[in-house]
Length: 412
Ligand code: PLP
Image (cartoon, rainbow, N blue to C red; front, side, top):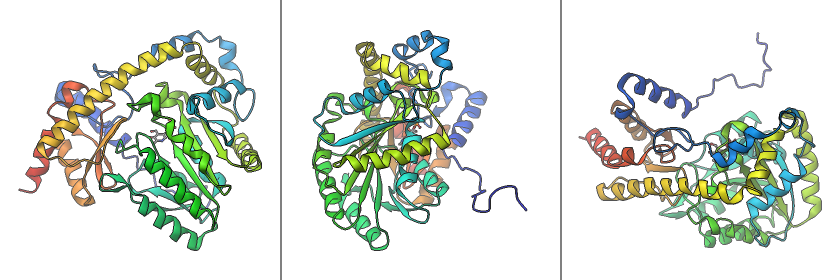
């Protein structure tokens, strides 16, 4: 007998991040901050080990009148000003000619989950990168949706061949393809597709769309930490080339962009050639929103609008200092990794670098051995994630060599 519906999955969540974060905390309490490297945390931390909360974001938030914080948002799709400014922020004057619409969501999580649940029926399959943020899989299984995987890399490049093959084999058994791509600044590898790769991807989607509708969910959670920020949206112009039978949904998150993870504010932008496709999708999404989260935090939306309009320059300047710090940390790690022969996936930018360990049993052993040496990381598929967003420069120095030595000692 159970109170819970029979279809529910009762296995507890295995959150590979939060459980290790806890172990790192315990080690710090026991052995002191200076003796532990905690590279688990996926939020931006400063050089003194504190979470970053931008003044350019939170000073204004604190001053928002209580009434605005108390109020519901003006619509289930989100406030009109927020939706407009999210679109402007995400596309940043790129010449995108597609029909589009925007819905506010609880973070990027809400945006991706809303896409999965809207496009796929129970029993269908969503295509994920084999090295990816773990939540995608849970979002699928909670919706009764199966998963299949494309390979992330072919050497140091995005594996377009694998995407193409997986789409074709999915089309053998299903009337639609839904695929997730977390780009730019992929979690956990830090890879970003080149414009050439984006162009080729759109061609693959178009070709496939002659057979079935194809939906690409582009998760851009980390886009505002691109090193070449001014060009970080250029690739979106290739969206213009999608065929009538392709839709792209872009999942945006205020969590990383504004350092406001706990405020649960994000958005989904729908792009298609035909307005009726966008409108029909939005009708379904709006109802889903009403039936689950109802509406999004009113003052968080208001604050986003203020930050990206009236306070834009201050905000960009403050954020830039942390992009620079992350670049300094990752440059050191990459250089030292190269010098000592520590194998890593092709990192370009963003919060995380991932050690390449394709043998999962070995990766588990290494992950655990790191902890024996007070180094806390996150085990991912085919690798180990190192969060350069939260490890200070002095702690990054020498880390790659320490890791390499530990790996070497395991094979002795
Ligand atoms: N996408 C990726 C790849 C992430 O790593 C995260 C957060 O860790 C998110 C989306 C969404 O975060 P949030 O729901 O806080 O916006």
